[in-house]
Amino acid sequence: MKFFIDTASLDQIKEAKDLGILDGVTTNPSLMAKEGISGLDNIYKHYQAICKIVDGDVSAEVISTDFEGIMKEGKMLADLAENIVVKVPMIRDGIKAISRFTEIGIRTNCTLVFSAGQAILAAKAGATYLSPFIGRVDDITWDGVGLIREIAEIYAIQGYDTEILAASIRNAKHIVDSALAGADVVTCPLSSILGLLKHPLTDIGLANFLADHQKANEKAMATK
Ligand code: G3P
Image 1 (cartoon, rainbow, N blue to C red):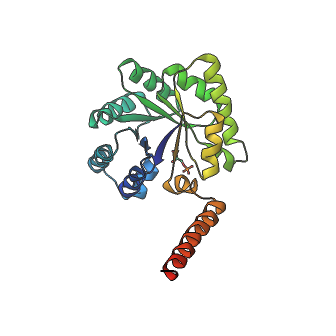
Image 2: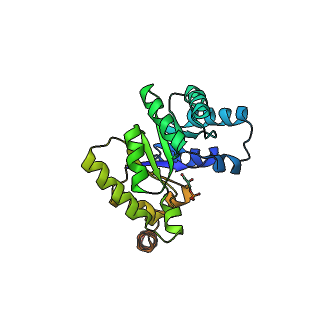
Image 3: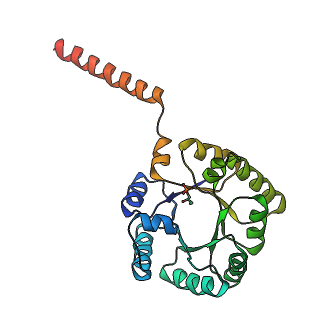
């Protein structure tokens, strides 16, 4: 399973890269706004800065919601760097644009996916990635990880190539459950990735190893 970081923060992207586990980046208009980035020029420059840090795929989202606008914007985004993947919302004109992008060799990430039906449509249109938002599904007391499992089963039965990118990850358990449910990629905040490190027995075990080492050294020094 690939690990993408879901942020527009250059510092967080660098930190995740430094860990040696980063396969790519996803962004969205809310995450760009959170970093205070506005205006098309600045937004495009920021995408190029992200693409310079990361070797893997970087999802850049269109703002337009009509076919012509999505196509124009998507082509401009795809021209920014080789590793840009154009993120397109799951709407009628979005599906039409994904289908056209696929024909002309532009890779896409179909976003705002909340059902298996939407997942089938995106795969039929040839989306490179599919982003089901599991945290937001959980928020309405449905089963986000169950949705990943359902889509993974359908894609396996039908032989679809679209990669399932579990998004709206809120904690480390979402990452583990997505891996088990058959996600190809998870995209998460750095905090959720770091959450995978934590186990109280690791902390206790390490403290004991270091204390034993210290005691043995003190004893050796005392007998010199
Ligand atoms: O990748 C989609 C993600 O950014 C949405 O996450 O936490 O806003 O539901 P969230």
